[in-house]
Image (cartoon, rainbow, N blue to C red):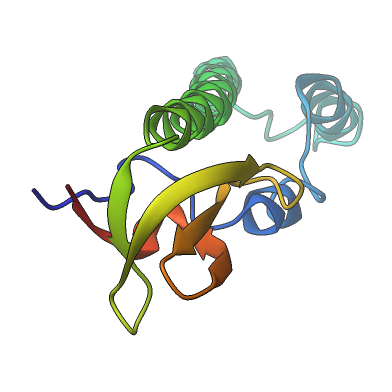
Length: 134
């Protein structure tokens, strides 16, 4: 039976890097108020545009929150999969080593398995490197 790393995010650092330059709703409202203060009184901006911009920004903010929550759920699911492999015989790595999962490490943010083979230990195996569960 083949086992895939279902739901693991690409990397913990990748998801954090994309959130460093975000704008929140307070910043957006400041920009909006600045636009209102300095608009041309002879050509005022339509109120419907502002309301539409607010609605779009709110929808974007909700989408970002859902994405973050989904990432955390997928991380938990990956951890659950790794724990379920504890004590199981698996085929892992590029050399297709067959061994038993003896330990799990979460130090890098994603589960890393220690697979003990008949001849030696294969340390730091990703969950996605597991190709067969026996």
